[in-house]
Length: 424
Image (cartoon, rainbow, N blue to C red; front, side, top):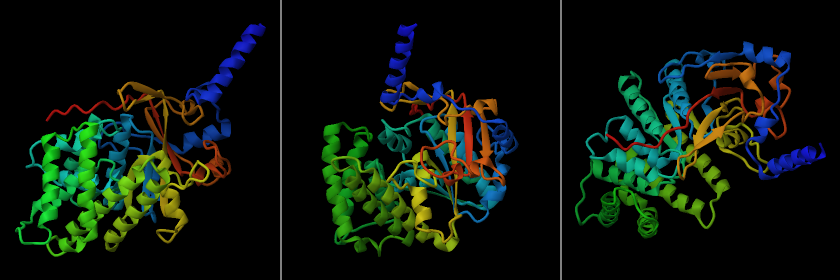
């Protein structure tokens, strides 16, 4: 008996000290009767196919007056893509939300926006060029590309058009440079005696080199291209006004912003990846984009990694994007952001390096599966007399649950997203 006792102690402390993700699975908490009753009566089952917006009317009373609506995901799970498409469709059709804010770089999102609008259809193998640099990330999936295709079809059928925008750093700088290449070669002709000609030539030559390698480059060539890229970007940022007279207002805004974002991306990666600087740049990029579209009184929706979307960071001394929006009183009110986190049970993500399945189970720490057996359910936490207004159920930080998010979505039995097939 003593041997069994000591074996249990050893296993417990091994799990504790290694940070094993199964620890929540072993020590799940249960809701009491009144908490369970509240959740059952403040929830709706969600559609699990593209375009099925059933259940989302639960949000109706909370959308008015919001300028930014965010869902926070664990990357790499198949049903994530259903949620973000259906959320945007619901918000676009019912509340005039015409801006999708993506967790991607400004340059990458610019190209996605052009793809959605059908402006890249004539470019051979464009989709391959865009997707290939995403290898080794959670975005190199068939579901991600299918999401872009669904947005493209939706844009074509929608009476009121929308914009697809990013505010992250451009992790895939070659894609961002391709966006600049597209801008300057789309509608503009240059003669050799113009001041911008030499810089345009350098961009074009570098992109042609990328294209010859099908954007699939080895580390040695990547370093070589990075040095050339930095040189080109430095020249643009040293005298950006030479492009002002030859580009439209919109193209000049994005051309200059993408160039700055590529430069900032190199700063973030530096010797070690700087998470704090990245979060600051996400905020600053959003501020620039919002200011550019401000005459439209824009309302944005996007789905990001959950770290960026909580109204209060769960990590001490870290301020995330959504928290910074509120702390800076960005929209002029402290009730301008709606945050919805996604929890998972018996679902899968994947390892970015080899695409092996990774189990995500009971990451909320609670037995939510006792409340619902459906594949996707949304729960409202901020209803009057909600226990979640007075207690912190899911987070390690201070305050109450609704200090972090007003809703949560519970996903069960979702497969992982699959590798991009590169078939057209």
